[in-house]
Image (cartoon, rainbow, N blue to C red; front, top):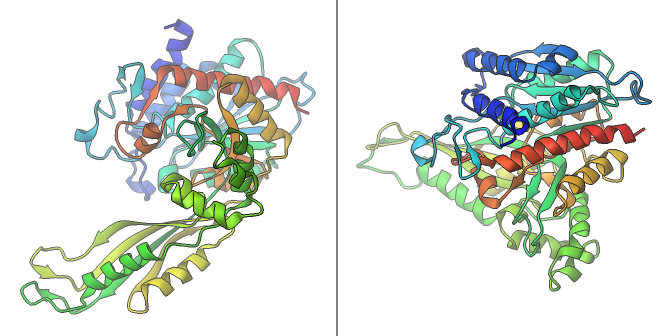
Length: 450
């Protein structure tokens, strides 16, 4: 490996070995791995820290302003914000991993470990690209802010505080770019080329608790229609009555751009999507869970709690639901629908709620710059907009910026996407290096924008 390429790979592997797991309660988060991560960033990317203005954002996040070339015509123009996050989800059952999740081993040309895709790979790629610009004796054509969150996975406060810092300085970014999307293969039925999917919005998030209560007692005398049976019935009703499917404007635009790359039987349906939206929504639902999530609000049962003992009938059974709210719908409407479906004998409590993000424009120079850069580095990919299923820190930035996009410049197979938040998360070394090249091309491309 070229020594220039080896340096960011070494940095990423060191950072992957740090167990930066955040807690919903900041007081219980171990700060040591985050402090060490900051130290590794200073060590491996010294120019960014020397030239940049580094701001600590509680609890453990960073904002770094990289000033523009003062001779650039756009030196005083609205800046760009490039985002990533330092925290990762817990490791889970380590016995399921092919290679230890904190070892950051390089095997078969890939780096294996928790955070390679979500989201330390992107963090290192961003700052490595900035470092390369400065190492060449250059500056970006406009100010670039790096925003590295510390509690994205627990929907914490660091990104919101970063936004407040920028707002206090009167900063309204030209565009914001966070994680989400990818150069995704096997991303849409019938499309053989990889898709450079760029998130232009993200679904809302709604967490609900379904509770049924009853007398409970000894398991040898079970009562008919007890709390467990009623919660089970409620879950079955939700399975049988999914949310209605429809196609959002962002999904219609994605499909319009995909149409030339679809096989002939599908092409006429997609080309006439605006005339037959119902048929298209049904087609997406039938195409599998990834495509179906584009067309409707989804409901996942994520937790079930009941009796603490196997020989005791529970007095209360609670099911946790995680809903991803489609663009154009609201968390209040979704909650009302859940109440109607499960029935009046189930208590429905809202644990957390975040509305869908506004749609960012696709007929805009900022989106066009992202498209051109995708095509430049990933010539095989078809750039398309889409609505993200997952929640990111980017949603906070919609309060100060109309152009908030979500794209990770890494090739990802279906198997890799499934490994996010699961086991065997991994990123090919060459794909990681191409991600750095993509960010460098994006930074260089700022010079052509006014």
